[in-house]
Length: 140
Length: 140
DNA sequence: CAGCATCCGGGCAGATACTG
DNA sequence: CAGTATCTGCCCGGATGCTG
Image 1 (spheres, rainbow over the protein chains, first blue to last red):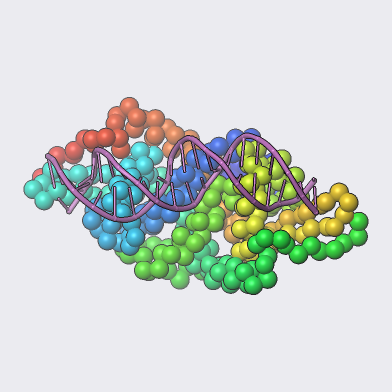
Image 2: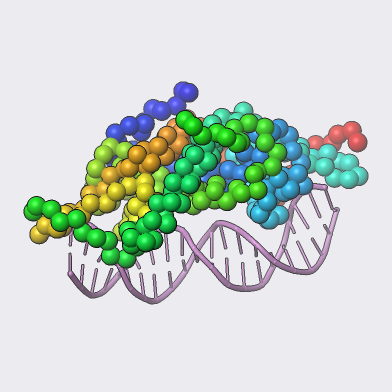
């Protein structure tokens, strides 16, 4: 909604400022960012919950990811000055808007990662995309 | 279509195998991959055209990206054994299906990258997500 | 034209130890 | 519980030089 001013079809060259793609990729293209946003789609969660919900993540990466997301206004951080410290993270509207893209990505992954893995395995056998590729002879 | 068996809503924990997300992120989460797929959405293109269409890309990255995409069955590579060598790359159906996700991502980027940059600048001033964050005092 | 091989610097990201 | 700080290895990614 309210977006595709550019791209979205046949486009030979990028609008010279493909930098904003880099911007977004540096953010949502990150594995941990996607997982974090997806996890936060459930609603407000605290630090330890996030760490528990995202299997392989380290404190460093979780903290860093959360900070970046907060900096960019994708999530909010609420710290309660209690005796047992408690900090809750929640998606902002902007963060939720990003969820659409993330969901599309995750959806594609869920739907096609099998195919990809299959093609990958097949390529290993045939040697496609690996070393010298077979040349399709054609009229010259 | 035919995808969201999981996620797509309130999900506390990832299905233990968030590995497939890593899979997809390692692929389309890459800046050059996104740009390459987006560029190939125009149709069949040759190596030099791709390099010209993607401003900052190096031969190394272009070649690497193309190989990975070919390995995964997202694009096809057709080499013509002519005197002036010519190689054309084209998206497969699988590659085109990925375009939806990529488009969503790019669309979000185009629509909100301004907001993100804005929030980012504002955070720099207030110190949010940077060093010590202000603690919101609350009832215990 | 369409690649490949190599060197090399920078930042990403894990493990570990410590703090409020 | 919710982080911070540091050390370090690894891989990304650019620049260069060479081939078919």
